[in-house]
Structures are given as C-alpha cells and as structure tokens.
Length: 144
Image (cartoon, rainbow, N blue to C red; front, side, top):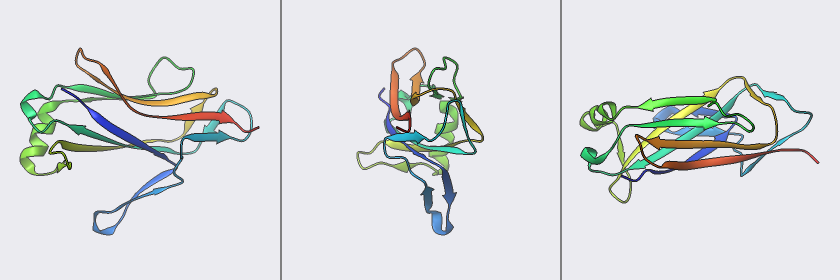
C-alpha cells in the first residue's frame, strides 16, 4: 500500500470560520536561524497531509514521526491505527482526493521547540514492517 503526502512548515496554524485553515509564517524550504545554536522557537507547526488508497482493506497501521537535526529520537511520534481511519470513513469525516484516494490531515504543534544544530527537520510515515515514506523536510541553517 502506498502512502503519499506532504507537509507545510510554519509558525502557526489557525482554524478559521467556514472550515478554512490559515498558515502563518510559512517556510519555503529553509528556516534561517539568526543567532547561535541551540535555538528555541516559541512555537513550530507542521500541517501533514497523507493520501492513502481508497480501499481501506489494504491500508496498514503506520507511525507518523518528526526528526530534528542531530537527533536520533523522534521529536514527535504518533501511531495511526486503521480502525480509527475506518471509523472516520464510515462517519464521513475524511475527504476524497482527486485520484479517489483518502486524504487525512494532521496538525503537529511543538511549543517550544529546541533545535540544537543545523540540518533537516524531517516528517516521515513508517508502515507496519514497510518502507519509510518521506512526507517533507525543512532545511535549518545559520544566517550568514
């Protein structure tokens, strides 16, 4: 089963009237740190969108996680159980993507976030016993 998706990295995520979502301070590939490492960001947000196969019988459990530069342990990790996805499908809370797959969204907010060194913030999903799916990365650099 394939998982596809992407991540929007930003300073804040706001839920608006009418079901809209606003992203404040969106990073476009690089987060530039002014000052010395380690640095503490008061708030850091990631809006993760996963696109799964429409046939829910083929979908496996997976782990969604975030890795920070220079760290082996995950800054964030969540087990996604397919029984919860199946319930969302039957409750009508998931959106169909253009290709007929299921689209699941998750907003991850880390406050505060300490970044110890330059590198990449990586968002990944790992299927049970399967491949690691890349859902986005943000380069962290020191200002020149």
